[in-house]
Image 1 (cartoon, rainbow, N blue to C red):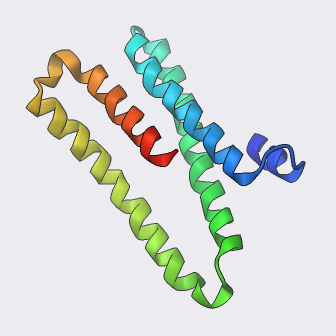
Image 2 (cartoon, rainbow, N blue to C red):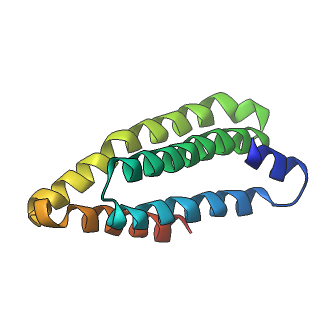
Length: 123
């Protein structure tokens, strides 16, 4: 709702809104290093979950405005395929790194590292 208001009031461009989402998700990844209590996990899950949902909804609506109408079905199919593949590639990557580098002790650092790399690629 907040992003929809910012976009409709012309305060931020779509690119700026997506970059703001990425910054908030990066801060969530850094906050993982400080998680010590159940309350911290709940706060982290709430903030990160709200940002992931906002990114998905906003990119879908932005995609529909950018592509020609005669290509919509093909490009939306590709978009959904790429979105679904990330639901298993991320956990696979983090699990593989955790096993490779004895992640029991360094699991938080691995999650932060993957988040920072993801942020750098997406920027």
